[in-house]
Image (tube, rainbow, N blue to C red):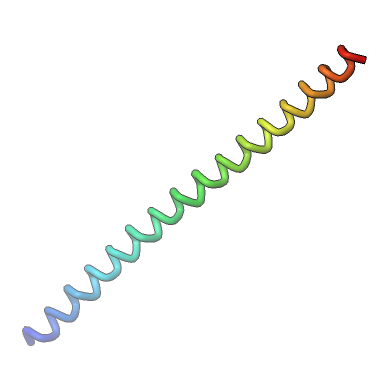
Length: 58
């Protein structure tokens, strides 16, 4: 009887831990995707800027 209660509590704690880890990984993935988009946008802006510099110096 007590063993079953302890097992069920352990399963619930494991599910909670799994949910927390899943949430942390989802936030990490979201932040990395945001960083990727930011870097791509920065690269695009730099290409346009360098194109204008080349036109201005030619």
